[in-house]
Length: 293
Image (cartoon, rainbow, N blue to C red):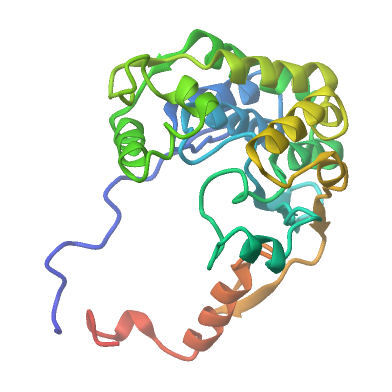
């Protein structure tokens, strides 16, 4: 098929202009928290941590304290780009024989055997230690308040909950998940319902008070390890204590049509994007017709 696309592919919004800073988030509530950090004199790194913590509350199917972080960090004072890898490893006790012995033919995608070691909170600490100006506890306190007070659920999150419940009882199979994300009658929360997450609020406050260490070597780490052990998982205190965040001052990059393009370091898929751009650098894509590839 050649000729113009049936649906215009240009930008649907006009540029957003600001005198000081801009915060972008899939959650308006999280974005507002980040904007407040900027208003109070925090820098972009501070705001990013505050937004990430709030998204762990407002975007539960996509974000959480148990997640991981890959980030490109631009330092305006030096003009340098940095790449951050804050993903977790598989548990030290994980092995092919272990999963085969449990009857798995492929890696489970849900349940206590599916996650890697959480890297999110550790990455927050690494970013703030090197680039931030505010204390972690103050930046994530609004997220704890948001979890405690609750917020009206957007339609997209309600549909995600419905999908998770429909796919093999993913939420119903685990009491703590059911308590957090299902109504008392077992039905998923819907758009407009107020989602309150008291347990998450307590966990965030423990990190706010005890720092990154609370999550990886403190009481919260012991609670996480105990929960995995009770559910038949493998992540233990040694796994949490061994978590590390890696920041490179020379992230992978390529030249593309006169522009230097950077990507997140391994083990992310950023280098694959750079390889694709390198292949396309010899072509004038703008001069080609729609769908002529």
